[in-house]
Structure formats: structure tokens, C-alpha cells
Image (cartoon, rainbow, N blue to C red; front, side, top):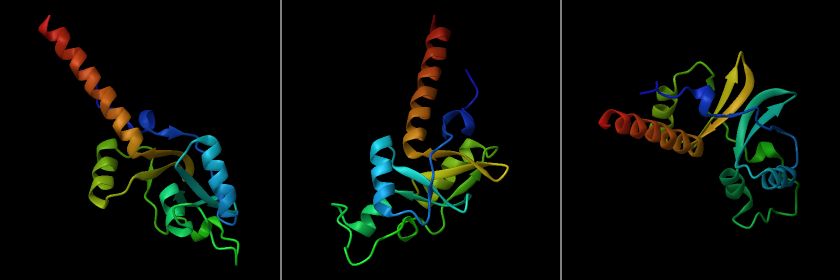
Length: 143
């Protein structure tokens, strides 16, 4: 049987990012266009946080109908304390932390720089692939 997958092999590498001062509607449009739900946030090029579609919905409402009296920025919806992990962190540790804290994503860094995003969808896909590998080994052993 193969070894358990590593974080670097199951994350979404080289993710897009958005500046914290960008208008929130620009981030919404960007996420829709690229079909993503998690977007790392930077301030002056440095990783600051993460914004996801759910956080935006909490600020804007389910129809993304934000108040017209002021222009909301990404910083108004971003997670205040997002989960950031180093690329070398064992995948099992990341999964345990995400489950314990009930969070759906982690921002992955390498030497302090943005390297990827790991989401619950990435975890499901990796686990399904892992189970397929286990089943293939079991089939080979049974033969």
C-alpha cells in the first residue's frame, strides 16, 4: 500500500489572492469567474487572511445584496484569524485541527509565502483517492 498522501500533493497549489482593500464585489466576481470558494487575502503583498464565499454571504446576505450606503472591502468579510500551516505540516495534523476547530480550509505557506490552499473538498478528494489505492492493493493481495 502507498504511504498516506502529503499536504503538498493534495492542496490546491499557487492559489489566486486578493488585496484586503479591494472592493468585495470584485472579489465575488473573481471567485465566480474562477469557480473558487476560498481566496487568500494579502495586504501590501503579504499574506493576511482568507475570505470564503460563506463569509461574504454573512456580510452581504444570501443574494450578495450589500448595503448601498458604503462600499464594502474584502477586509470587511475576511476571516480574522485564519488557519495557516506550513507546507511541511503532516496532513493528518492539518485534518485533525480542521475537524477539531470545525473549519473548512487552511492557507498553506512555504517559507512564509503563500503556497496553496487546502479545503475540505481537497480532503474528500484525497481520501477517495487513498481509499481507491487501498482497495487496489487489497484486490492485488486477494489475487
